Image 1: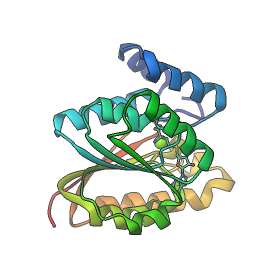
Image 2: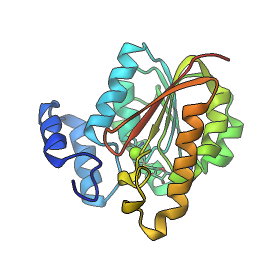
Image 3: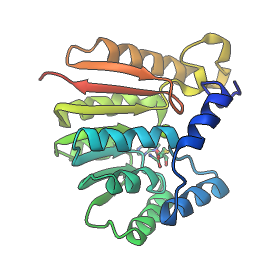
Image 4: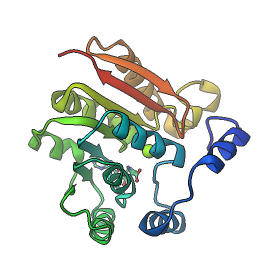
Length: 216
Ligand code: SAH
Ligand code: MG
């Protein structure tokens, strides 16, 4: 296990070898992300999202944290028809728009540039799937609006929930991350005890919580 991985390296390497090689614009975005240090979803996490979209016939998605549009584009290609995605960083949002144009998905992916805390109250769509993948210390805030807009039977995916293992054990917690870790632990606890949700925590990528809104 290395600092960045929540599972054994040989398992991650093995699983990644089983995934199909990306090509075209997806491969270009992966290359860009690597060169520029842009965080994008781990291969096994984005694959799981694609499967959820296909299994659940997911059409409308809300994403919090666009970065360069990598996950949004992959989710649209997996079958989503309308994706609202929010990004606070202006430069990242511009790169995302460029990528969405290059992928010819401007009719499906809508980038909202701004702080999700301010953008979320202005949205009133209803979504089959909500993907929370932005500032890790603010998930609870994003969650309030997500619950309001998530359809009954809809899926909530919260990424980076194990935060390099720090959420699970004090032994790994870096001092400067302590506030975020405390908030993530509280968030996981809330998800797992929420009366309207059923949740499972998967040790995939950086830890993914999958919840289903089982009742109103
Ligand atoms: N979902 C993307 C990766 C997102 S990385 C993918 O898999 O390809 C997280 C992004 O969240 C960063 O680009 C960061 O700028 C953005 N972010 C952080 N805080 C935010 C906030 N409060 N509102 C909106 N976006 C935010
Ligand atoms: Mg993430």
